[in-house]
Length: 245
Image (tube, rainbow, N blue to C red; front, side, top):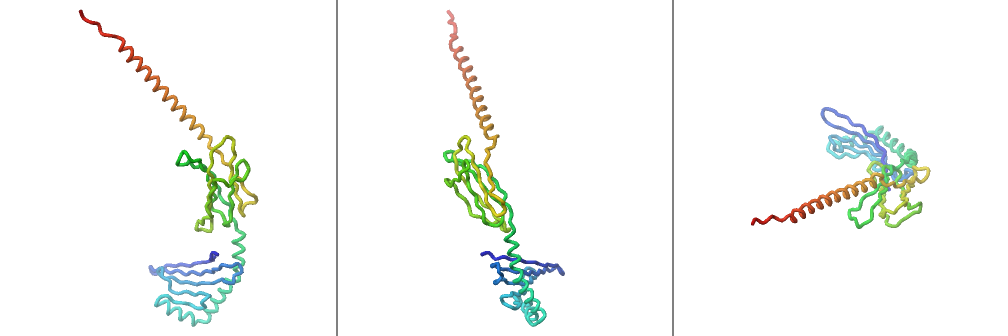
C-alpha cells in the first residue's frame, strides 16, 4: 500500500541562509495503528535534526544538530509536546483517510482515431481517460452497442504524480459503413457509465473527395495536352518538302 503523508512546512530566510521546518503525519492503514509523526529541520538544504515518533527522540545528523538534539531530548516540556502531536496524528488518521476515500474526481475522456503507419494494417481508435481519482476505472469498447474484446489492448492506470491517474485503451478496426463504435467509461465519480461515441471527422471524407477530384482533373489536363502535342507532330510529318527540278 502507498504511504499517505499529511504535511505542513514553514520556511524562512535569515542572514542569506535558508532554513526549513517540516512536520508530517504518515500512515498506510485506515485505523492509524501504524501512524508516525515526524518533525524535521533543514539548514541550507541539509537535514540537521529530526524527531520520529517511532523512535521516540530527537536525532541529530550534523555536528550542530547533535548538540541541539541532546538539548531537546533533555527538555521535558518539548518532549511532552512531541508526544501530544504524535497522538493527535494517530487520532486524526481516520478523518484524513475517510476524506480521501470520499473524494473523487471525474475523468476527462478523449476518443480519437490514429492512422496506421502501415496501410495494410487496420486503423486504430484510442480512448483515453485523464486526471481521475480514485485509481479504479473501467474502459469498455462497444460496437453497435455490444461489448467487444477482440483487437483491444489497454494500459494500466498510470499515476500522474499528483494523486491523479490516466489510462489508455486501443481498438484496432477496419471501418465499415454505418457501424457505431463507442467507449464506455465506469468510475466512482460518475453517477452512471458514460458512453462516448466515435464520430469520424466530416472533413476527412470531403478532403479525400477533393484530393481525388483534383488528381482526376490534373490527369485530364495532362492527357489533353499530350493529345494536342501528338496531333501537332503528326501533321508536321505529313507535310513533305517539295523537290527542286
